Image (cartoon, rainbow, N blue to C red; front, side, top):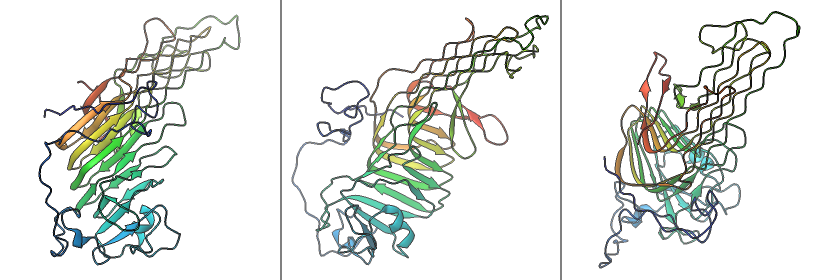
Length: 382
């Protein structure tokens, strides 16, 4: 499907900074895909009955305790979810909402990881205090790594509107930054959202081989580790695992892909991914903007030891808007922007011939199932 790539203008700042991800005050990365010429504004009828099929900005009578609970990050602990005593966190609102089907969020930010396992509608864009709709979107996402929003096994409708969902920067080598994961859910809609993934981290370097314990021992046949042939795998739980380089061998295994002892160099780790949304066997509709960083560079392979082969370099990390296994997402109006428009590099090999493959920047990558446990690999293409 053709995508609208209407990039928002950015203020001048260094590549990969907060400004590039739309997270500094001088920057606006709101979607421009639906821009229209100004026209007359038709105010919604505040006295009309609530229509739960409509956005609350079009049916303001729905913004009431009869239909949902209210959430403000500035609220005191112990709120009951009303407009005057809102919950402080989204997680608390989800746990204590009872039979209410909606959450109304004011400005935020909400520094938490949100996990959804039941149907719900979450609407941002409200003013704290008055709870009037302003369109000011709150930000969701914690400072530590992990999915900012994780939707698991929901067989009824989930709707997320008017929010920014931001993945944290990685803290360890070879770690991903992925804003949203959706797994085995039948009807998930994102409306007017921005999903932001930071850059993945570089892969860990492999360890060099060391001389054999007996320097006068007759050398044994050894092989250098094979370079990776894929960029990573998507596990059955929807976790992306970057592909590491293979270790060199000491005993001369046929594939050069298993450690042969401390005399051989180990493989470099794969670079972490930057992905706005991972969708595994789920039906997703999305309207908004996806902001993606850069995949981490692959780690270097360890050098050969006296009696062992060299390790291969790790794969470069992927940077994609959406990573999909199963149904393709329904992209009504989506802009994809690369905050760091430079593809990652594969890790140098411990030998000349076994460097890791470079990563890829692409709007999307579709996964192909390789085995019965649904572990899958990808070599994304534009």
